[in-house]
Length: 98
Image (cartoon, rainbow, N blue to C red; front, top):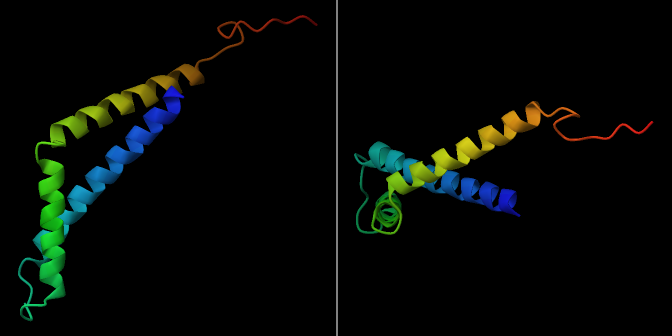
């Protein structure tokens, strides 16, 4: 159960980081577009991206919190991989009764 929660937390952190970076990238690329007026779809998309950045960078979720969570999750995954790589029948206490 703990492994499932760890994987779910890692996936959510990756998704949040991807949304933040893609929103910032979209704003940077499309900031100098040719605006067509009041109903400009690019301006609407830019405002949605700004709201995403405001939501994720505000008081609720900070970049430091996300980075710290991703760091601890990566450490846990690394430890798990290293432990599973070095498992031997002796360390697993396998009985050879044949």
